Length: 180
Image 1: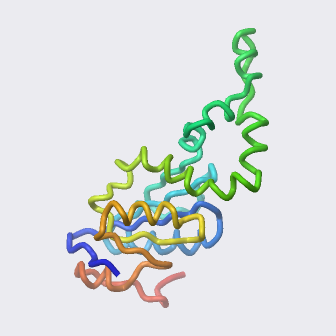
Image 2 (image 1 turned 30 degrees about the vertical axis):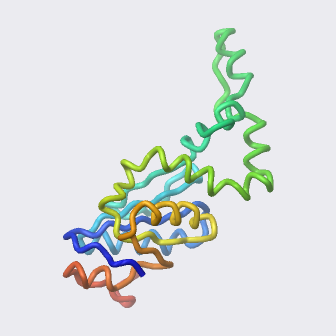
């Protein structure tokens, strides 16, 4: 495991591409914020959890995903353009082609890599130089985690936030009994 940064305030990022284990990761990020750290939740589902703890930042990659490569063309609806030209209100949401492509099996296989390309444009929000740990949620989290760890060797990763992160920074690690 890489050496954890010895700065004052820990920064932890949770990569929740799907909804699997989201509640547990949100709880872990809330614990980090409560202990005096900062936390970032990266999602790609278009909605933010209502019970998100105060202080946890959210980066939703859905809009950025639609701007990567050929997706710029697929996600635009031709009906939207025609309605705009006619002065009518444009339909909301993505095009039918995008909905079909986004739900297809081949796209689900490459989507984590497309999301990495979308996140790569938003590294200012991630603040890689301050990042200490990445919480991996599922298989979809691996491409983003791998690429971020390649860029910064001091970033650790795992399925949860290690108690070592708190103790190295002089903070008290949350106990399982203290969690609701």
